[in-house]
Amino acid sequence: MDPIVTTGLVLRETKYKESDRILAILSPQLGVISAAAKGSLRLKNKLFSACGLFCYSEFTLYPGKNMYTVDDAEVKTVFHGLSESVERMSLAMYLGEIALMLSPTGAEADTVLRLLLNSLYLAGEGKMPLKQIKAVYELRLCGECGFLPQLLCCKACGLYDGKNFYLDEQDGELLCADCAAKAGKKPNLDPGALYAVRHICLADEKKIFGFRISEESGKKLAAVAERYALVHLDSIPKSYAFLKTVL
Image 1 (cartoon, one colour):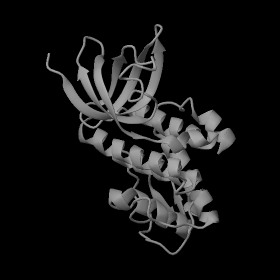
Image 2 (tube, one colour):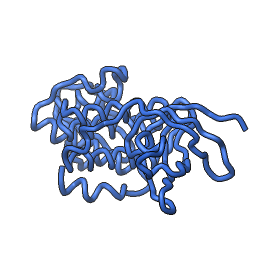
Image 3 (cartoon, helix red, strand yellow):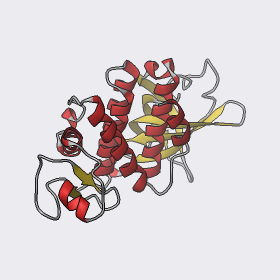
């Protein structure tokens, strides 16, 4: 078979035999794939650097019966800053695991890959609070994968803004404070957090990280984003428990 050339981000690496690795790669064309990188754990092997965890590389792949084989790989981007702190690396592991769990395909995979690359860059460079990066990623990823909440107005009375709101993490519906009280719910978004949720979910992808938020609103945003993501995953990511101890 002819080789396939694609860029991709290594989301997971598993040692196999003495010097081989089995990689989980998020490719914009192929989605999440498994690929064997033979000999890639040897320091002098041509695949050593390009097949590392969270390396964004260009891969030359040969299709196989159960997985691809990496024939060649060239590094495009390495997020060195992630390894500078436990917090950054723990967040990266969590973000990558969610992408693995959702296993996007087609155009969805391309969008998710760009979101993840931007998130890892911001985390590695320390350009934004890690909890804010996490919240943006969780909400936007859910939206891109078919779980976009209804954020236009209160589903009961049609109120757009001006008050605290309640976002139901299960059905993705908004209720204003008054309607939430009638339903026995307590608002979980103040005006600042509501603006941020709308911006993250609805703005152009190039602008989703471009907002400021107060500390108090940021806490509400982080809590809602996390619950919303976990509700829509089939299971709790394995990396979540440790992440919560450091972030």
